[in-house]
Image (cartoon, rainbow, N blue to C red; front, top):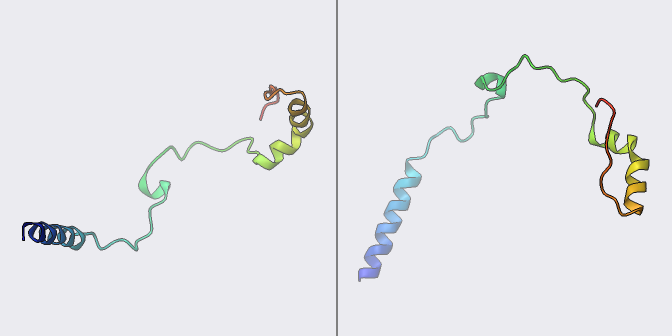
Length: 78
C-alpha cells in the first residue's frame, strides 16, 4: 500500500510538471541578429572551406603522413 502511494504521488508530480510547460514549442528560434547577440559589424574575410584547404595543402598532408609526421606549419595568410 505504501509503495502504491509513492507511485501515485510520482505520477501526479510528473503530470503537474508536464501540464505546466510553455505553449511555444513550435515557435522558431531567433537568429543572432534578432536576439541582439554578437557583433554584427564584424565582417568575414579570407573565408576558405575545409575541402579547399585540404586540396591546397594536399601534398604536405600526404608527405608528412608517410614520414610519420603529423604537423606542418602554414605560413600563408588564410
